[in-house]
Amino acid sequence: MDKAENTVQEPAVLEARVGDLLYLTVTASDPEAAYRSAADALAEAGATPVLERIFASLGYRQDVRAARQAELGRILDPASWPATYIQGNPAGGIGMAGLHMVAVSGANPTPVRDGGRAVGAILEQPGIRRVFLGNLQSPEVLPDPAAQAREMYAETLRLLDITGSDFKLVARTWIYLSDILSWYGEFNKVRTKVFRDLALISDTSNSNVPASTGIEGTPPDGSLCAMDLIAVEGPGIEMRPLDSPRQCGATKYGSMFARAMLVSEAAGDTVYVSGTAAIDDAGCTVLLGDLEGQARHTLDTIDALIGQVGLSIRDLTGATVFIKRGGDPEVVRQVFEEVAPNLLRMPFVEADVCRDDLLFEVDGMAVKPR
Image 1 (cartoon, one colour):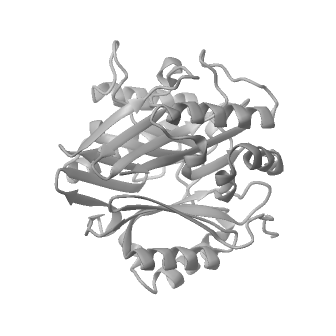
Image 2: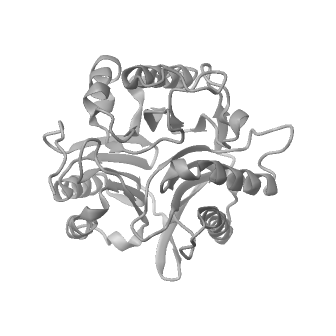
């Protein structure tokens, strides 16, 4: 197998910090180089990971696992936090696209284990409590994708209960669905019912839903869906959704997520930006068949969204760039060079978006330390 060409000649390492939280992104096609860079960054920060998302071809899983164990194992036990491995071919080829980590420095998170398996961590600090859960899946592989989604949410609620948390406290979810175009509608029905049962939504309000990404991604063990999340609570932290000036709320067309979630604390502001694509204020896809146009529209939309809190598209970090299968990543790179060069260093992943006519999506976060 030939690896995809990558314009990032050396591993690109990006860090964003708010208080004791370190958000780390490494973009590299070589697993050893990626994890060597991640280990060096964690060691320098004295940080312990609590969540990890890996984007790579399924055929490279053993190479990635070996590099992860060898490089991270120099400083930490890689089995002590959850790692969500997602089929994420680098756009235009195969191999590794990159990884994201959330880590804690200057504090000691409490690991959360279930059945001997690391599933997350709890970080308790004065006035703030955070729960991180990762690689959440149905306990068994079921033939019906909707049934798997229901079991994934049931497992998530069980683990939140174990940690003393609640879905109403969830600020951000990342959800990966195998063959998304064949059952995204069914998934939305499952999620909507779960949220209605939890009283997160009602006939009059949908304001309690988290920021989220819902994108194509296949776990390596036959599961059809997987999720990571971050929950926050306490008198020292405030969480509120941000509406988009350029898009209607996703709940208007049956997708129960906020466009972004603003989490404010003494250390600074964090904006978790949901997966964003070229959808207008009526909920319709725009610029059909135009990858460049959809990429520009999406960046402008995110710029307006986070501009409400004094940030811009050039502040976006911790991002994943999703390009529909068959799309030309060079077209996207040219847009980024002009509009948001910071995004050139993020992982580019080949993936279908939730609608067949959407050619591009990006998610991420932006921080404003105080």
